Image (tube, rainbow, N blue to C red; front, side, top):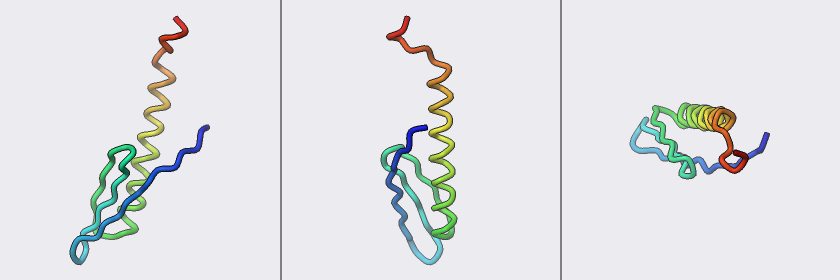
Length: 65
């Protein structure tokens, strides 16, 4: 399995508003703590990559036909 690195940007707005963004995958999550948004964005990135791998396994390679 290929290992990739993605940027995660966390921003605090006010007392308990946080957002995390992954610019490479255009994924944004919001929450009430730094830890919450960091855990959730990592989860979403993992889910996104798993879906991509599944789609690539299902989709035949055009060059091989």
